[in-house]
Length: 214
Image 1 (cartoon, rainbow, N blue to C red):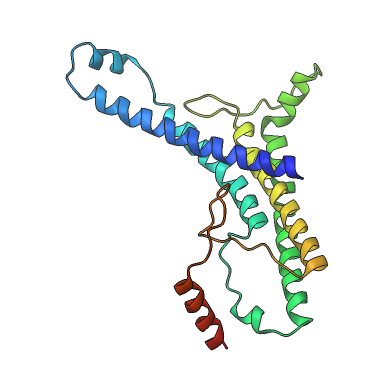
Image 2: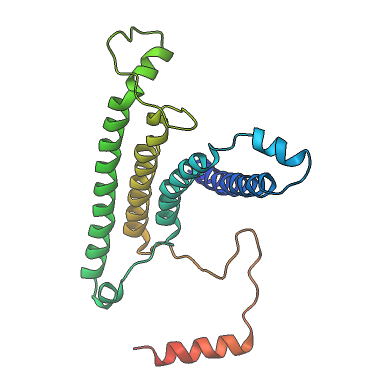
């Protein structure tokens, strides 16, 4: 699973960084095209970057789908657990397990429906074509307006991201059943950076807070 974890993180980082670069270049192109600089303006006007907005939308959609799966694995999704945490065991554990399995069921259904949609939207044609099978009478599927990419490739983010999210829900549910712990995200921690020792004032304040906690 470590390979899948790293692949997930690399994909999200690539999509986020790539979208940022594309947006920056698009804005720079628009600025230079509107600035009367001899030679530069003409060159910018001849350069077509109308596809940049569509590409960014596609990249953000993929980033959001896989980012949601990453959020389940690391516990960064926002949740209201005040009532759940006030329950006593084993009721609390059962409610949490039910919620995790419900999340797995929901994302699993979305993955199946998404895969069916992708298949009927031209995915079957491209797969049959790649395998050298007969594609007579099969629906080739539409393409995107600017990039002219097959839309089934864009929509593949739904079954792929939802399948990964379903897997993450099942992973968290299994780990919770074995250890009783849920993934917790520390917003002050930076990945790859060593933990800094807690200052005396912070430790005292935290101790006082816990002492007054109900």
